[in-house]
Image 1 (cartoon, one colour):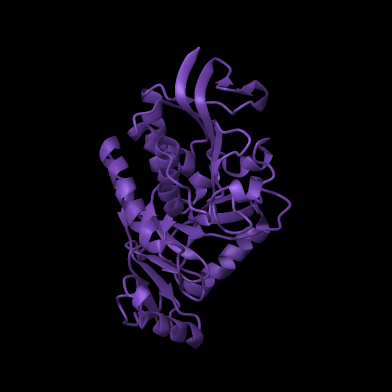
Image 2 (image 1 turned 180 degrees about the vertical axis):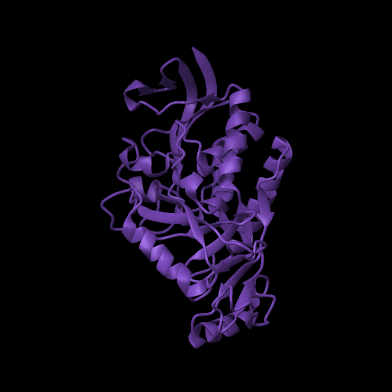
Length: 349
């Protein structure tokens, strides 16, 4: 029987960062995860964006989340000896005079100046980008190469003997004074399962509202590969002439796979901003673990004090995960409070 301080279920963005902070806190960890190339963490664009939506609203907790995300990913880069997180400007293309006016108002607001420091309307080559009304730049954005990060971190866990590469079998899990799973024991178990959390017997009453997203990978020759261009979809550079296009957001869906409808929607929105020719190389879909109140689920089960969760990060998982993974770890190790806005106690009490 192998003993650990913690079992973490799931090695997406949430589970990776939770296990990272636990290991940094001197705890032993076993991460249980069946590799899935089509998980929402792996398909995600990985963009950390301080200004979102058609009304250019500052992301919730942006002033705290973004610097902490940067310091966290940079620390992991240093530990793993490779790079996967970089600063990248986001250029939002105006599609109406109203958007120009909304942007102008935001530029004059003190709390937005850190992210809208450039008040100049930008112009791009019209043969490449449809930007009759111009565009503006959002500062403070970053991009995580989610696949590279997850692969490197998975190897790191495997080298430490901290990875069990299988799907958790709930029938083999026993929760009492200690947690036992097959030949492994732990003091606590934390679930970071993404959308699979809806079927978790401890947390299946939490108000998940899954959102399906589809994306494309395309090749665009001689295009802007040093910035993200965004309107209703984002054109995000990957490497060379390869770009990520996405994503759709569908709350009412009947299939989780890619669809002709999703592809058509993406192409229609892409053609509104892109005048350059492109070639589709991949079409992917995944279901995000979004929540009814658009806030993560963080904390320990009220009836099972050694069972916890970090989930429901939705479309902003790359920016939310470092902050709330650390918050949960500090709660576990030092008894610090979990933010009321995300604490699962209000849902399960």
